[in-house]
Amino acid sequence: MTGTSVRVDGNRLLLPGGASVRFIRTLRLPETGTHPLPPGLGEFPVRRVADHADTVPETWRARGGVMLPVYLREAMWLSFAGTSEPAALQVGVGKVCAVSGRPWRDRLSRDPQNYVVLPRQPWLDGINSGTGTVRQFVAVPLGMGATVEGQLTGEEVWGGVQLQAFTLNDAELARWREEERRRAELARRAARSGGAYGAPMAMAAPAAPRAAPAAPGAARGGPAPAMGLGVGGTMRQEVYRDERPLTDWAERPAGRVFVHLVTPPQWHRITGEAPPPSPVDRAAYTRAGLPWYDYYDQDAHDLSPAGPLQDVKPVGDWIGDDHEPWQAPAPQQVRPLKDAQGEPVEDGDW
Image (cartoon, rainbow, N blue to C red; front, side, top):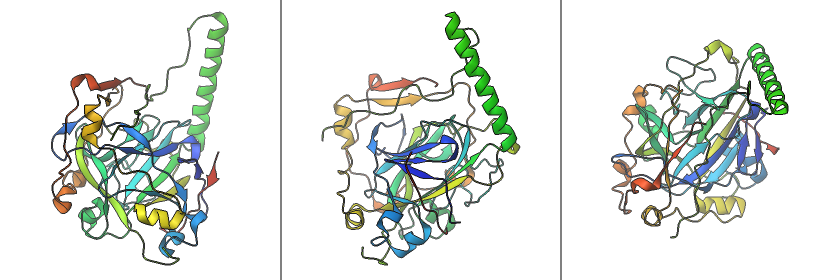
């Protein structure tokens, strides 16, 4: 596959239909207990592989896509804010589905569901491994067996993150657009009359961002700086069930992108840019009284936990105990959240 409709706008990936994906730095959770949503601490920088063809590993040039720098044991979450039209988004970690735990494929599946629905799903912080909970995405090197890919397939070949977007099929998309047009017209009429009768219902998106102020605190053809995603602590987050029939979606993906994860030293060698500062000290963040979050959508239905993903072990089983101090947020620090054009990216063979 050589063509793609995925584009990069700053640090955002723009997928077909208006879906927007950002990779957010965050506080790493302890590997025991269940926790509220950690805050966003800024975006990971995202760069196109094609812009650094002379310095990326050869395998990266073949796969295309984008890259971003991560520290060992750094946590991240994916933000899907800004979606305009409905989309079904597959999220892979080393070509293992983060929703179903099944091998990566280019078709949508309902049994088990192997995608998230946008804009209903505002973000994804980890693998779907429990009822109303996920296990946090945490970066680890390939070769140790600590990644989700290594634990479920017995091999660590791909690493990185894979995204694949499906739009509604032509008939359903035309129907959805017509309904949106009618709702917009009703809203305009209501505005002219000074009332709210007939105004459109709000899309299911977060009313407040998960963001917070910062806390105190290779040569061409060389070996690939291989990093993948394992899992860390557990947090309260639902992965929502699709309420549409599977036949509403297009049979083939409208766009896909391979996201390579690179170590900070290799990032500097490839791009010439300084990597982001090391992750924020989580105890300092909590002591400063900065917020954590809870999100609940009463109209959505959580997916059952994915069988294969329930048995994935945390990265601490390979790397050792987490010695970074943990200070739980006080109840008043946990804030409830209400319901709620860039450069093209080259795709390759993966």
